[in-house]
Image 1 (cartoon, helix red, strand yellow):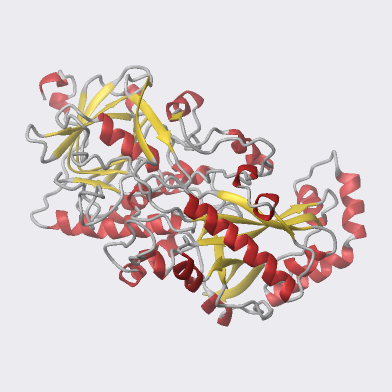
Image 2: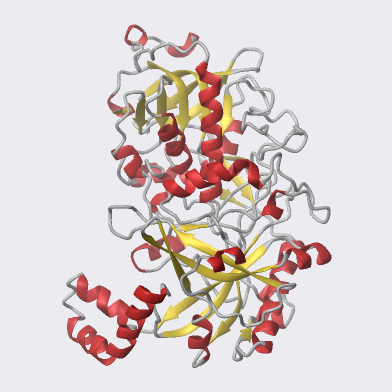
Length: 574
């Protein structure tokens, strides 16, 4: 494995690969990992390097003309980042991306879940639903992705409760209305308890057939004169170095915004952009609108937190923990024409939370040491019982909190007018920036309202009183709601069998363009409500298997990465 810096390469180099991967984030690095130690020569191309570079990050700027928008009187809730990552709450919408090896995994919290069976189904009450395969068809890929993310069993519905060491009590919540839903959190195997950082896949790579080209931004995907095949990439660095990469197969892994943008801006042969003969590239953009639904304060927090917290099991000798929330039942969705959505608990801890004090003491923070020791001693009973429940019953730790909210992440109905186009503004390479017009429709707003009202009614009915319904729901006034993006842009190059409403086929190859594939959440046919990483990696693994088959016949030993004779050549006539 070699990491080359384009800034230090000979000008106008020509590089060769069997498979060129654009983007070294989770999707791209997963594909590289799956192809490692094969006879397929792989080159991963990324705008950044191994470390954060502020100048490179400026390439993420977009022209945002749609949601999210600030509404007068609406409560600000932010994206939910805290402590060392709290600065990410201030990053503008659709710019929370990381141009360096590891991509978005540098700033994710590890939250993971698979899509539901119904997410794959054609639902008559929602436009453009239905995947070209069923969930069971990618179960093996999901399990491989789960293993990569260091997760437990891929069970996220009420079936999980049979495996939990001490499952939550049966409160009597009406299953015809609400269902339990669970999330896991990916953690590094041997680097503490931080979320998995995919940059370590690059750092630890030990495969002779996989190389990396850093500080190389792809400025154009090149097609043959007939517009039928992708054969090469033009790349540049911010300091003016350039190169061309020739590859038999190109896999675009730039994320939900950049995948569409690069297809649209690569218009030297295809005037409307690659794969955009039917005007579909960039359309159907979805994210996960997030809003607060209900909240508990005071004495009600403890009772709710005991039922909606982390619950664990032992899997292959390891403790695995799942966060419990509630989702709209499939019956309610079908009967009332709603989208899939789920609410999860979010606690706001008090300043005298003993677990935070213990964490500061373990880090040796001296400024608050005296107060932290006092806090821990005053809460010794809570700490002892919490550790017992954690170790014996595999429950989440109890916290001192001032508030417990249920926030929602909702699936969106696909809207062709929610889209990415090209702005008149250009980046330092002269490429038009992305113009993002994200729309939040009435169907998803009604779905969130319905979930909030059901939570409020059912919690009171089963004896969990004290909840406060969000003002925007109580007054039926979405204008008082704060809807934010969760940095999960999806569906902008969606997968499907019909080129009239999709960009890639069931194998993730761009319709009509041989050798050009796309990976990442942009190929999701629908967005679901679950965090996208696990499903994104399952599709990347599925694509990797397809690429192995594609390259298996007639493979020869890989050629050198750099075509030395052409390294100083003028690329204008290539």
